[in-house]
Length: 141
Image 1 (cartoon, rainbow, N blue to C red):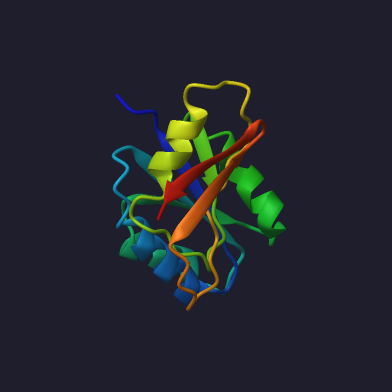
Image 2: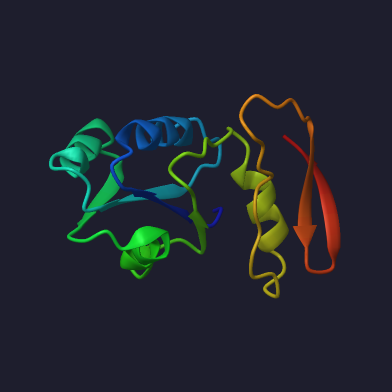
């Protein structure tokens, strides 16, 4: 069975961006993910609306705006995944983005961090590069 990947995104009064991000996560082809949304004391109703729209995600309402790091830290201890993806709420996931990350990290416990290739919206770059501590591995988007 493939390892579980926990995904955390943080919202602060940007529910439209967070909804786009969560919609994109539904397109992931990796079979085992859990999703957390930390709402950092947004305007009233945003956390509840996100939970209602995305019942498969765990939405946690922070009583204060703890920022990106504090928001992630608020739920990090509650994740169950072998790997954790900290995803900005204005980022969009592509269907196969997790597989090469897990594939690169899974056999080598000395790898502590991996990142998918990040593209600015509207760019058309079909080549990706996954950087490793001891070199790089080519992969396709």
